Structure formats: structure tokens, C-alpha cells
Image (cartoon, rainbow, N blue to C red; front, top):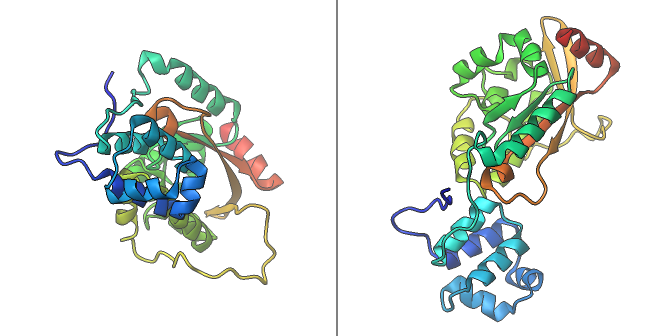
Length: 272
């Protein structure tokens, strides 16, 4: 079993990486010191390189920052320690409980679409309902070929992906870009994909103002229209609690639910 450390020939300085993680969480030194139960003076010394952390201190700070497991490994490596969290393939024998749980969650969600994606939005697994729905726009494989990858962020925002069929595209795009920009702080792979996506023409400004004249719904639905057929969907996200493997930590289950009775009837008909 290999531990994923994501290191180059020249490890990044621990203090700078810790400071970047803290600023990414929008925490002051004092706030992080209080959360991690250390003195602000010691934290300042760690960030400036005047002090070296113990392995326990690195893990204590990572826990206080609620960092992804991959970033915790990066902090450990930068401090001169080996990473402690493995990255196993999803088809590995040890990952069987994770794989079986994902398959069951996808299956029980039918006839509504659901998928498993990683933190970079790459599609890992789907249930039977998702390809049936995307068949209305030519199919998931054809769309992936057009946008350059089986990546849901690309497929949603690319001009040759779902974009022409999303009625409320500006709202959805602004939400996805803001969320992805936040998550990219912890995931360099997503950061590279986001840079590619931001080169797509016609994307909305992420700081776009809200039209307060329009009644606000509890959640933001995605409204699709294809050849006169309309469907409105809301999405929930689920993840594994207390993961101890980077792969399990990065997987998310996206369950799509119909936002109205018409959409429910259509989704049931598609799978039937």
C-alpha cells in the first residue's frame, strides 16, 4: 500500500503551506490557535519557520483546520514526516465495503438520477437513471467526448455540454464556480480543471447580484429544457463520515430529486 504524499523533488515549506491553509479558511492566527489549543506565539513561530512542529502538532492543526486527508499528508511531508493516509483504488479489496455502499445508494435512488464524483468532479459511478436522462441530449459518453473528459463540471458549463439546455444557466454557473473555487483551495487537481473551465466563453460573473424581486426557493433547482420537454431537479450531496483513506474522503454522492410532480413523472417514465 502506498501513501499519497503529493510531493515534488523540493517539498513546499511547512510554514507557508500552513499559512495558506489558514488563510483559505479565512481564520486569523488567534482563531486557529484557539481552535487548535496552542498559543498564538507558537503558531506564529511555526508559520515563520522559527519553530518546527512535532508530528502530533501537525495532525492537531490539520484537524482544527478540518483539512482534507490529502492536504494533511502534504502538511506532514512539508514538516518532514511521512504521510499517514493511504490512497487505495476503488476496486481494491480493502475498499469493498465502500464500493458496495456506493452501489447500494445509487440503486435505491432510482428512478431518479444519481452519481458518484470525486473532488475534481470526475464521474466515478452512475445509476441507471442518469444515462437515461442524459440520453435526451445525446448521451453522457458523447457529451464527455465533446467537452474533453468525463467531468461533470465541464459537462455542465461547456458550450457543447448541458449549458444550452439549462434554463437558469447563469444562476447554476455562478453557484458551481463559487463552490469550485472554494474547494480548489484544497485540491490542486480541481484548480487545474477550474482554470480550464474559466476559459469557456460566456460564463457569468461569480459576483452576480441576486434579483430580490424573484421569490427565493429553499434550494436552487436546475431547470432543463430539451425539445419542449422540461425537468426541474434539486441535488443533495453525501459523503463518508470519518474516512481514513484519501479516495473515500474525496468521493461524493450526488442524488438528484425532482423539484415538482411533472419532473417526477417524467423521470419515472424514462427509467420505465
